[in-house]
Image (tube, rainbow, N blue to C red; front, top):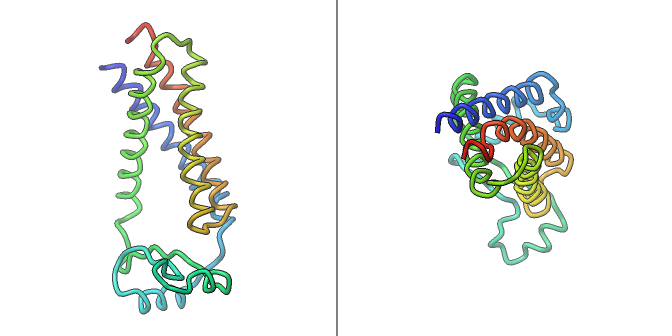
Length: 177
């Protein structure tokens, strides 16, 4: 149990640092986004009555196919009054990554009882890439989110899962089970 706790904590920390490098320092994913301004933000606040997700055209509309073809189409996620401080988000983000690593470690422990180190790393990477493939490219297909944005996030998850796998495979090994 001690190895599981330490391994998942270190993997979660490495994943957090990778996120900081990828999103915070490199800025690669943000270069794929369009720009906005304060006028747009004020308009959004006026148009949307409550926090939540809004889809245009409305999936319940009778002429949805026609509206989709004509455009525009959009998904808007809005928090009308902003969000917690970036530092609070960092803490929540770290916990999210740590729990992700814990789930990967539990899966690894159940499945790879007799597998060598690189086989365990490969299993974690494949599990992470498979989940990311479903979620990220599904968002591009079904929710019309930009392919470049989703590919960027897929790349982040693939590399992050590989980093986590390198660490988790050391702590979740056949000798320690």
